[in-house]
Length: 597
Image (cartoon, one colour):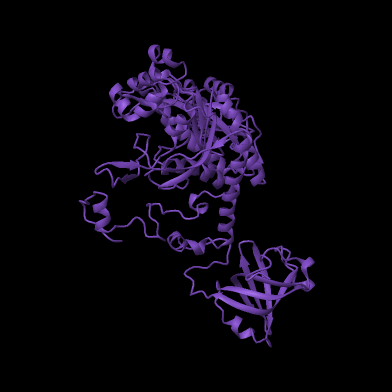
């Protein structure tokens, strides 16, 4: 017999009744039922109920064993009585009659409970004692889900002919949109490595080297502020790249991978592929976001012409003097809602810094011109035109926002989400995927008024060199795309710029000299000069995928050892001050005083 176990704590069933067994695990719960002591023994596979009688010489010893101590139990598998069967447990038809025990490790008093599905304990406690937090069943399930998702992704990419390569962790700093984590060089005083924000340049260089299909589960490091869906430090991507690939080739590869993954790891409905493709401009106009949640049925429509030169002076003046536009959020069957529904939405708009949220409500019976403050200031012809443009019918309502192009889209998108949540319109039983395509290649910096890259500077501009030479930069689109699921951006991707002449011209328009480009990206520029294939790819985020599958909005619920929102590891005490000799070896002198927290 094995030293510690013949069975896991989740596998004994009625078919094993009367056999001798040895199981090991943690004491999850104890219950003294007057003459009988029940112990639930837990490992990662499940729970087995163990029982010892009061007249046993083990009774007192087990009574005194603290919760979360580790035991090895020898005993006999017995069927439970009919009235004590627990149908919620795979082992619920049996129990183990204890004959021998060995205390492998005795637990101290716990700083937080472990034997419960969810924890209301402060996150600081949970992260400080993360090894205890991970014992809880819901956390264990999340981490095992992450493990399964990564394994399936690897298998599916291999099946599609992709080779798995690892790219360097210590590399050169490059301007990729976020702060680098820097690593001092002991051998080269005053110089630093950087941890990769993404394997962007390396995966492109693999294509230049002649490899056709690459992927890896890539660690990425960015020194940026935390969000609920972003770790402050490191995260992982399914990073992949393809040579001689078009945008549609990239879509055709990753769509079935994601569809199969989400279908196999969740009971929710998954939108079939090919996934819907929405241009960036249409996404902003219809959904008010470049990360649209397609589970939300509400749509946005521009209705500026209804209010231009109208008697609704507030909008009319802003349209005429500031070129503001008006967007409407059409809400079917909302006219039946009470006045408080509209008032609460108006109050909500003020809480996010807006002047309010105007509306017109078209009751099913009665006033054809609609109700609400705005309706009183629109004549019958404009109301009729509004209905025609938006296809509004009696019983519907429409909410209005007025502002600059980008700001009005953003506010309308927020209102679209808030209204749908209030009316419970979002279909929470599904995963809805879409692609956002045709992003602007350039945009204007609001502070300087200069043309800058809108997204990835390594993307290929649509139209190539001809577009760069002969088109308005702000009209140029990029072969840049995002994949979105349920309002969450899973990945950015692009068909890459593989020609030195196009790269130099693209950076020139953004204000970079040839010398700057050669200094910042000399390795890639030189590589492209020796013959580079057209190539492209994407990098869906592992954490965001698992967050969706686990149905949690907090990334720290699916990461084994995350940092806090202030980028601290409370369990290990990082970051921390290091010994003077280590600083000296790295040729670093700390100017500011070091404080200990």
